Image (spheres, each protein chain N blue to C red):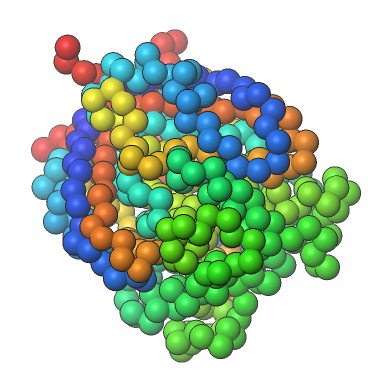
Length: 145
Length: 145
Length: 145
């Protein structure tokens, strides 16, 4: 069995949903290649941004994600009591927990075993979230070559 | 430490929430039995179907899941821009990310350590989603017998 | 590689969102300290309570979580068919699947590698949920000291 872990900071993204599969693969491609079978864990160290897996092709899907989550988790809900950090703050916390702070993806023969249409999204819920820190960890068995 | 991984395709399910604990256990029962302590990871390779854990007894719970998610993620929302694949497509993507594409379950003494009332649901969000591919991975330490 | 697993029961919490990072760390602090790199898995063996990671500082965030999820997953929805266990039961199942039954957190140099503001929440969705059982599992590589 083997493991590796890496911590890195993404560039600052605007509020919305962003495909970051390539950014993550650049950080781990070489280390992943030595693992035959395992699990790849991606964790975001924040409470107002999140991670999800969804369609990697048509950008209109990501646009509709932003519209849907703004609609179902509104700013200025009458019952919010945590309002001192701005109107985008409390909805950001709620969206982050609805979508989740980590992803786990199977590793098969040195690669992430995602489906054809699956990509990793950074879900930036704040207006000015800044740069977000990601911790990736892989656990698995080594390839025999 | 040991690992195993298996990829398989479920039969096609109708739109709705379906208990698939037995289908998954059939695929992995033997391999699981050799692991003393570990984590079992279930991953669905799609972006319009998802996985969750919920009540394994009364089928009315699964009926109400379908009603609730249709109500909170409607078809024909006025702000959808991704509409070319049918009215059930964009809601399916949103439901899939809300529920998630993977599950992680503790392995204890060769078995999944689920609570008494917990079962694994396939959440089929499309009208005609077809057969869905699952990748299961187990990581853990071997039993000593 | 190494592993450990522990099962324990929390005290009964009232309906709402509760920070339980300290309760969990008390159970695992010593065992965690021997792992250099790994993943820590927290699993709740119930279908009407859940786990999430969110802000660990201002208690008003947890108050607003309870308000939001009561608003978006109402009691007495006209389409519920699973009603025999009380009006808080079906919403509890739906909230549990929306938030999820497990968390995975990176382990780095013997500690949980959470962000500064991240804490572990028990999300108790029932009026009288009673004591909840948690299974924690750590998988990783040993420290060399």
